[in-house]
Image (tube, rainbow, N blue to C red; front, side, top):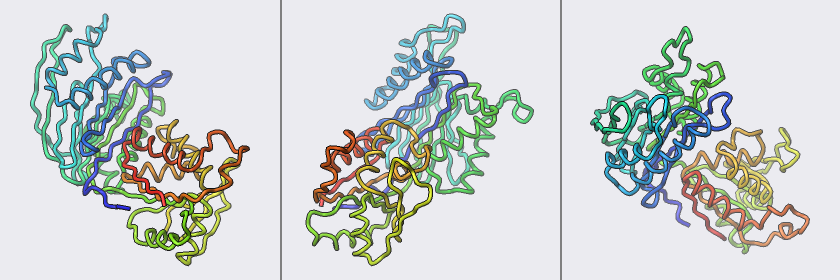
Length: 397
C-alpha cells in the first residue's frame, strides 16, 4: 500500500453562526476540488438581509461563482452575469449577494475576487500581509456601479487566507470597546495572538475561533450572520486507520510492521484488530472505563496509537455523524465523535481493512444501518471525500 502524500495540501474549512432569531444562515460557504484535488475553488457569499431569502441569494451566488471559476471563465463577465441574475431589493435598490472567491492550487498560485465583502487577510508568519488589488467597475441596473477587487499572488507553504462576512467585522458594533465593530485590523491582531499560541492550528479550529470571538463580541446573540472561512497551504496531516482482522493470520506481522513504521497518527477500530496489534507489537491493551456512553462501547488505549475503539458499531455511528453534522466533534464525547474528530483533522486518510468474516456482523438482530464493515467503510470514504474534501485511500488485506 502506498502511503506517500502530496508535498503540500490545501486545507480549508469554515464556521458559521446564524443571526439570532433566524431559522437559517444567510451566508453560504462552498468549495470544489478540481484537477484531482490539486486545485480548490472556494466561495463565501453573504445574501442581502438574513434568513431564508438571504440564504437563497447567497447559495445562488456561490454556486454560480464557483462554477464560473472552475471553468476558468472571465471573472468580470461572470460577475456581471451574477449581478444581472439576482433580484433587486425594492427598498435599497441593491441587487446582490456579496462574495469572496478564492482559487488556489498546490503550487500556491492564487486568485481572489471580492465583491463588497470585508477584505480577505493573507496571514504569513502570523502577520497580515499587504496584497495589491486591481479594481474592475461594472455598471449595474441598481443605483451604483459594482466594484470588483481582484488579487493575484503566490502563496507560500504555511500561509493562511482568512475570509469573512461582515457579521465578523461588524461584531460588537455599538459597544464601548468596539463602537464601530470589531474591524479588520482588530481581527488581524486576534489572529496574530492566536497563531503565536497555536502555530499549527487547523483551518477548522481557526475558523471556529474567529466565529466564537465575533459571537462573544455580540454578547452571544449574533446581530447578523457570522461566517469565517480559512484556507491553509501546508504539509499534509495523515492518519492510518486499522480495522478488521486480515483473512490470513500470516499477515498479522505485516500489519504490525506497517503500524510501527507509519509516521502519522494511528487509529484502531475493532477489538480483534486491537488484540492483534497488541500481541504483535508486544504492548498492553487497556480499556478506558471513564466517560462511558450507553450507546457505544468504550475506548481503549495502546501505546503509539491516538485512538482505539470498537469496530463496526463505532464506524457506523461515525459514518452517520459525518453525514449529518458539519462539526460532529462538537457533540457529546464518545468513541464515534472522537473518531470523527481525528478523521476531520487529517488530510490523507489511509484505511487498512481486514477481510476476515466477523460472524457477529451477520447477526440479523443488529440494527439495520449496521452494514458489514466493507459497506460502512465505503460510506465513510464517500462522505469524507465529497463533503469534507479529504483524500481517502482504502486497502483490503
